[in-house]
Length: 227
Image 1 (tube, rainbow, N blue to C red):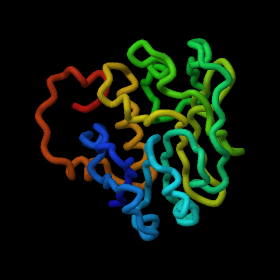
Image 2 (tube, rainbow, N blue to C red):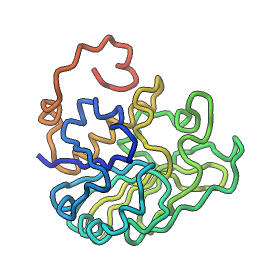
Image 3 (cartoon, rainbow, N blue to C red):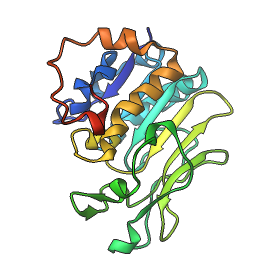
Image 4 (spheres, rainbow, N blue to C red):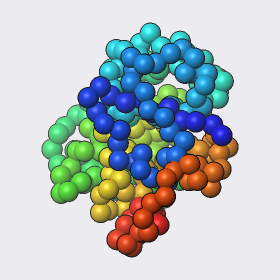
């Protein structure tokens, strides 16, 4: 079974999505604990938005090698340092008013199946959580979501010609919705299923790695597929 590396920000606890049955093969490390060999040992890497990007700069050549040999990278946040070779830096959206922050879907993707785009535009009645700008997509990337007003691309996925796959989310971590009472709570488990499918992992094997959990009371079944 192929394992997934989660890079944890200093001072940040492991996120709630680690409790999902789909997360049984994820290991967490701080950037200062990284070794060049990690980019050979792991087949997928998840990077949250509040990571110390400067600490990742020395690992850029290893990141490129990781991708070239078929690795899967999920990046969240504003790309401001050259940690992923060949990608452009974050560009803020043109406005910050409510109408400037409405998200629209451009193309469907398995991660967002059953997710209402309104639940991305608004979280707890507030707009702007999902994205306020763009890490510009390279040529050939599939655009998934963008801001309706100025077209800033928030989500894209790119199957690189050199090898490897990058899923880019220009905003707060996609898994922040995992305990929300909206359709957006589906994103985290679907993301993990998508990554593991690319890696050729069996979801049944992964779920067997997790400790036994109490039976669900049914309150989350409609939103999170956790039961």
